[in-house]
Image (cartoon, rainbow, N blue to C red; front, side, top):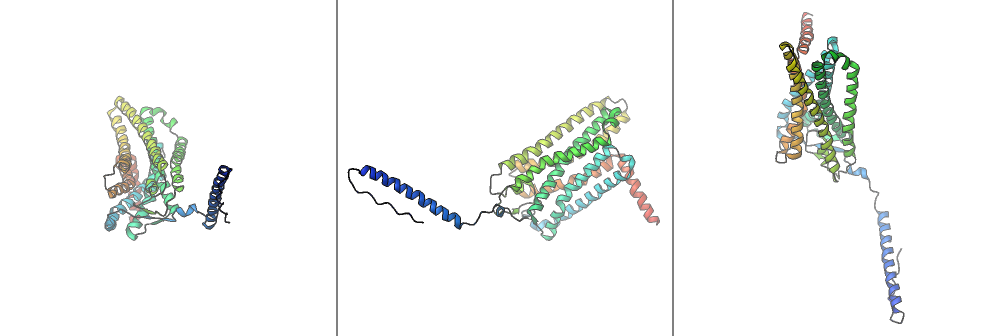
Length: 363
């Protein structure tokens, strides 16, 4: 275990060789002593566990600086969530029960309602539990699941809006080919493409989060789990998370917005060429409904992303309030916009629910 230190050589005719030998022996002694010490240190140290750097749970802090107002904030949030559930649920019920609405436009509208329900239900129940019962604890797996479904629903909704723009483009610019192009089979394939694209964009975000060490940091200053909020807790380089988390979803959303804009430019050109004023007004009203939904979705998205990335001077609680409103406004307003602006939806809604009410009262 111990090495004997070499003795310093005496002077003599062969002193240079002896001194060189002495230096080599000293170097050997130093190297072997370091190796022995390192060996015993390794044997004494416990095995390093990478999983110990991943917290079992995260703590959602809510809205920092507004903890005393959580109860009051929860009242409008809960009201908007219940209204979104009622509106989107009614829309799905009407489209599924009325065979006359089994058309591409209404099937896409049903997909939009499903993603709206997914978007709000992924975050709002846990948010309300945090506000009402201070139940901010969430497991690591549940947090990653929330991240996946939150961003998955946002990506899917963006592509559904693009598909709806294409539907309006074909209906107005090529009305005679509409039934041949947009069949139920084509809508089913479109839905599959939406699922695959959203999965391929969002799943790497979950993988990138799962590989990060957190070194005991587990308090998320937010009301729900989102990609960059978790990544900033890591005690490692998160450059890949920042680049991918910003570049891929934004690039996909920008591509969708560009295609939607091109579709509506062509639609406007076709509208001005229609000979009948009645036909122009009917087509224009349908397009206005869709454009309103597009603005309701994309304006909060881009505003939230840009303020999150560049708005360092904006207070943190403002960021969180805007992010929460983004989860609630589109699901709340989409059924209202389509119910008010689209005559078929409004008529079927009145028929189904008023007739049901009259039948219930007669009994």
